[in-house]
Amino acid sequence: MPLPCNEQALDWIEKFPDWSYPVLLLYGEKGCGKTHLLKLWADKAGDKGIAIDDVELMFGDDEAERELFHKINQAREDGGFLMLTLSKNIGQQTIALPDLASRLRAAPSVEILHPTETDLQAVLVKLFHDRQLRVEPGVLAYILPRIERSFTAINDLVDKIDKAALAEKRAVTVPLVRDVLVEPELF
Image (cartoon, rainbow, N blue to C red):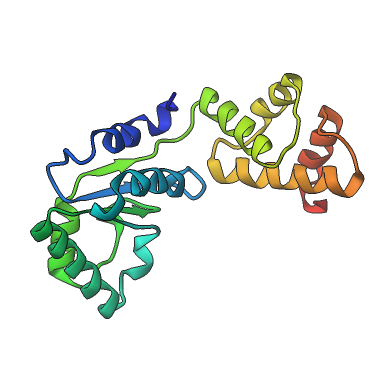
């Protein structure tokens, strides 16, 4: 089941290859799941798709911009597709090659929205599970009202909790989480 914050992106992935334009831009803050969604799409697209993560790293590099422009044109000619991820929407990017800027601004763009309370809980559960950390519902209930509402903050917190649990050979409990939240610089 998709999270409300990424539901629109998943809709685009599901309706692939029935896109009206050969490029889809997916943007959102660091840690919001763009790379995961990009991989889902790339697996589905197979040889018909080109997936580029953090495409804004190419902007300002003349050669890289020309190469991207060529890939877009080639996809248009061959019936191929590209999915590109960015941290900010295309209108906030500085692109040197005017033709590339024009092509990208014409592309559909999907934002991974800020997480809801339900999203935050689901992401916390997934991150703890990915690290093979067992966490009781009471610990999640303690964390949720005390954290910054961003994917980056959640990732950082889970990382610190994991390090603290390993260093102190403790289970992930409310007292451990409290210690991490009170003195995060120690972990």
